[in-house]
Image 1 (cartoon, rainbow, N blue to C red):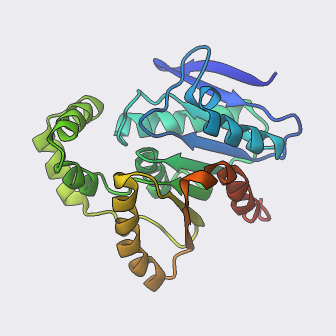
Image 2: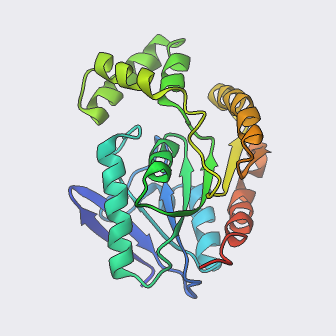
Image 3: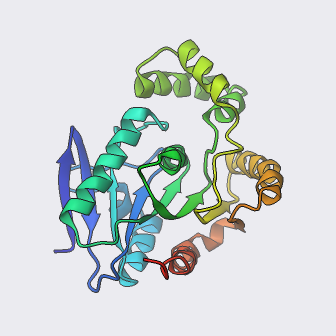
Length: 246
């Protein structure tokens, strides 16, 4: 069996099985275009994601992910479902219970909330063009009224509240500079394509000075768009460094 599609709550989930399992799992959390249905997913339809998935499977990784209610923007409902998916995998699959996490874009918002959860142990974390702070992302998007209006509508749907209430919560949460810890190795990969990616890279540069001062295990890599197909192998090299301790 190459893969299995199943539902948790209202949402479709997929688990991809390697031919020769190495005993480790990867929870993948996608960005805005990510989707999962009963027969397919963005990871199997998109050429770049399919290439990455195939590399991980070839190296023995069991890969799993969820639709997470679509454009979730890191909502608590989506975080809860991600944790339920991990619990389902632990109960039903023969895997090390400490998973690797690979998250892209808005998916980083969920990954960071998992990282902060005391009941959840992340083996290593890879973030691709991550949105680390929803507060900062909203401020950036204000420059484009059309996209900002669309983002506000998506946020109100995802968080099931009005934007004013959400903004109050985000103001109290801060800018996300203190989100990492000394126990979880992190690799941040920035693909330098598009205006948003360059803005995000500037945010990373500002935060990196604080991370270095705190001696956090975070490495940052910048990648040109034409090198994107190399990401799968780069990620495998990083993950395999953090599998000695079971």
